[in-house]
Image 1 (cartoon, rainbow, N blue to C red):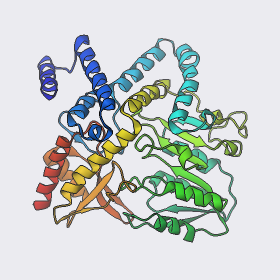
Image 2 (image 1 turned 60 degrees about the horizontal axis):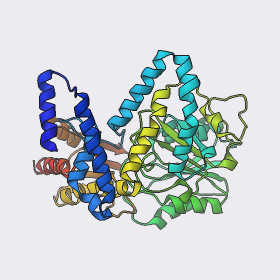
Image 3 (image 1 turned 45 degrees about the vertical axis):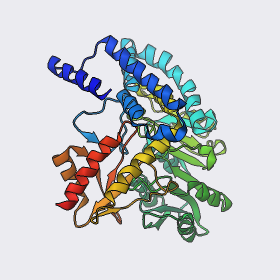
Image 4 (image 1 turned 180 degrees about the vertical axis):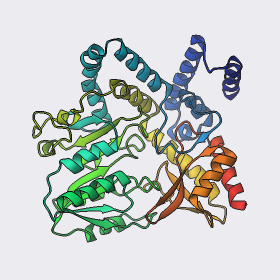
Length: 429
């Protein structure tokens, strides 16, 4: 398969562009389909580590042949089938925009809503389709009615846009943020739970909970936190940007009041697609950012009144869901965790390399972080890219200083061997 791929790329280079004949495109599609079918027939454990099958599945992506992308946690690339769907819907829209956008593609939101709800394990009447986690949780932050002096508990390791949103609400409305500063990695649920409880007072109205800390990949005990919040009559808001379609779970497993995520991360949906879950009994009391004529209605669709939007990326979410399900949610999670552990266990053998993520399955999955003693993370990232053409990201936030590495399902262990070799050379220099 690798020689075939190299031959096609070489041929395309001679021609001056990567343009495959319809026959070649069909052959690729059939091989990917066969690989997915074979993957699902294998014993589960074997399917996680079969590099030949995963290399064939990788053909579904248009990954750079020169840059090794290990920053999939920021934004994931889309499989070719998703890219093609966006193009198809976009070109259709341009044939007669007001007809095809509003009378054809807009009608596809309801079946898409049901499809997302099935994946999330919720009712379709609790799912809103939007552009990203920031927008999804912004609706909650600005839509909730709080009183001056009400308190919210959140961590200093939460995502900056969420932090900024609550700080602005604190500035304008007089609420108060009670901060938790976690020492990561944490391998004890009770430690995290105790931090939230200790920061809680009689004025606490909200716990803002990040399912997976984006900086390091730390998984927080979201189910226990949501259960404890309910006991105390506290609203639970979950930032699921990095866990939806990354880990095998249903939102109903931990029953939050609100949950927001980005679909352009681990679902590999089109850029600028996201989702908001609102528990049904909370919909009427949550005001939309962009109001319709019934802002206190109990219809989840009131949060989708954005005016003119691009329907092409939204409708192509369906193809991303199909591709995700073809791999299998649990298989995908375990493959991603396997890849993270693969490189972590190798680089940690160097005395100058320190991991900043747990290797226990309940506390991490695809995201991993490391540092090299005596080196600034920005310098490590620069060396990795300039010397080895490996793309990662530097993390410098609050008490965190490290390099984040995020492979995806198209990443091979051979790719990670290349990365490990680069880290070892940098650490030895």
